[in-house]
Length: 429
Image (cartoon, rainbow, N blue to C red):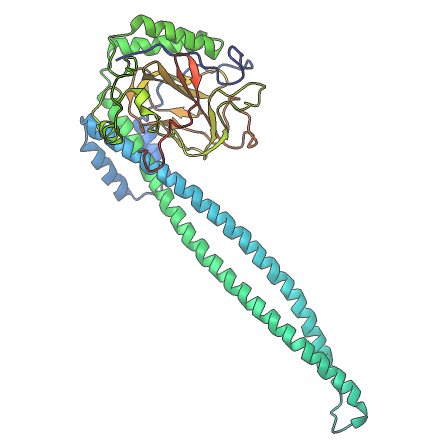
């Protein structure tokens, strides 16, 4: 495994600022699904047993084929990202339909009162009609007034009737659209359920295939966890990891080599071809060449940009993204997991060594499904968000009602602006 000295990356405030002391959670073991976890997950899903059995058979057929498992994981993660986007869009459209329905019902309720008043006036005329002109010519003036009143009321009634008819049709159309959107929402939730089970089963299968991890990797993980337990600040943790990584670093790979200014620039086709190799065990391309190709770790809305105020009196050294509850988080780039686990009040964090002195940090996760020392490919699942903001890594207008993912890129221990590094939606995945 190629390692690289990680960097010091405070999550909030200025360099060296210490987070508010909190009860420190002891780092836990890998959040890899066990057979009991998988059974519980299956029981919670609405998928048919036939579909579950077919999915498990599909994954069992890949046993031992790491390349196919990697490809299946990345593809499943991409389907989850697309389904999450569609679910958010459908929910927005349903919200708009609900607002429209309330508006139409409000107009109908108002029309009911106005029509009732007009009908009451007509009823009074019916109960006390004007005498016929042929019977009592002396009452011609009263008859003319009544006729004028009726002539004025009838067009109003017709206009009201047309408006009510239009609103009733609109209401019917809204209900029809809502039913269609609900069907689309259910279909996407079914996709999320199936891919959730697929990913959990694949991770468990891959885990079984690497139970023979070397003693060196196991020792690395134990030492990193011990460092997290001793460190009182994130800065101290990263410093300790840097020293350890430097002392155990192996021969440099092409991905870790310094950027050669005379090296030819990789074409888009060359980059995509390299990233398509799911058998790779080191970064497909030098990180410096990945600008414009990184995968966004999670779907969501940027609420704090790089260089903006972080809400704690400091400047944000990364970006903060408000996500859906339980949103999937994937690797933004190829790299090795330098650290994963809970740390102080930052929730679960993942630090990736992405080569060429670059490091990626993700904070605020609820669960993590990778191991320290593991090589992950761009787009592979790293874990999931929770149902609300975890810790105090960011202050936003959303408060703590929604989960917030903090993303930071660094080069040579200096934060860099991630703007321009992300792939367009049509490129990623």
